[in-house]
Image 1: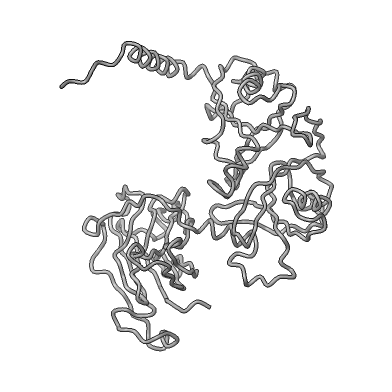
Image 2: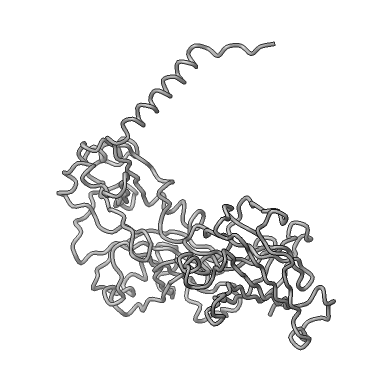
Length: 437
C-alpha cells in the first residue's frame, strides 16, 4: 500500500521555505548578524550552562539587519521583538581581551548610533555582538539610561554559595572609578537578600585559561587602585571568617572555579577500542615500594595501593578522535585509565584526566579518594617533563578528574621541545589510593 501524496499546500510551503533560505544565502554578504545579550541571558546561563565570563553568544537573541541600514533600525527591531522602547535602550560593544576573556568594553556613542550597521561591526567578523543595557524602576518599568561619565564603570556581579556549591548572576551596577568596594557592600547584600550589615568577601574573576585567576579584592582600596574597569566581573560570598571553613569542599570562590575548570564535563563518550588505539603494548605498571604502601591495607602485587602507569602513544599527530583512553590498570581495588583530549577539551591545551574505568558497574554510592600526578615526558631532557599533582574524591558524579589546561598544544607540538619524538607521546600517571582525610 503506497502512502498518500502530501497535500499541495504543504509542498508549496516547503518550496517557499527552501527558496527563502536560498535567497538569504545568496544575500548573506548584504547583511550583518547582530547578537544581543541581556541581563536575562546572563541570569539564565551563569551557574547552569557557563561558569566563566558572562554569556554564550550562540544562545542569545539574533537579528539580521542589512549593512547599509542605520543602527536605529536595530533599535526598532528590538523594540518590536522585546518590547523595550527605543529611548530606553543603551548598547555596549563586546571585546575580546588579551587574556582571552570576552566582556562588554564600552557603550556606543550617540554618533555611532547614527552610523550604518556595517560601519559598526568588527571588520574581521560578519557578526556584531552587543549587550543591551536597560535601567529599571522599582516597579520594573524601564526608564531612560542616565548619562555615563568617564568616572562611571559598569561591573557585573556573581554570588557564590559554598554550602550549595553554586554560583549565579545577580546583576550589574555602575560605580565610580574613584569609589571603594566597601561603599557598595550594602547594595550587594540587598541583591541577594542578606541583612545590610552581613560581612561579605569580594573576588575579581580575571581569567580562566590556561588556568583560573580569581583574586581577593581589598574593599578599602579604590576600584582604580584595584585596576577594575568596565565589563569586569566581581564574585562575592558570605565571609567565612567566623566559620569553620573545613566543613566546605570549596570554601571560597577561587577554589570553586578551580574545581569547575578541572571538572571533566559529562558528554557522550567516544571510546576508542584498545585494539584500534595507536598504543604500544605492553604498557608498564611499576608497583610502589612496600614502605610507600605501608599506611594502607596490604594488597596483592597485581592490585597495589599505589602504582605508576606509563602510556606510550604512537602516531600522535594522526589522531583524529576527540578523546582517547589508555588501557585499564588496577590500583587500590579500582580499575583506572588515563583520558586525554589530543586537541584540547574546548581549549588550546592538551587536556588530561584520571578516570575510573569501571564506574558504570560499581555499586550505588561508591566513593574512592586518590592522590595522583599526571605527566607528559620530555624525551630530550627529563628535567623539562611537565608534571601536575592533585587529589580527588572520585564518585558517581565525578568519575574523572584532572587538568583541562595541562599544557599548551603549541608547547607540546613544538618540534624542538622534545615532548613529541618520532610522533610519539609518553604520558605517565602516579596513583595512590588512600583513605580520605
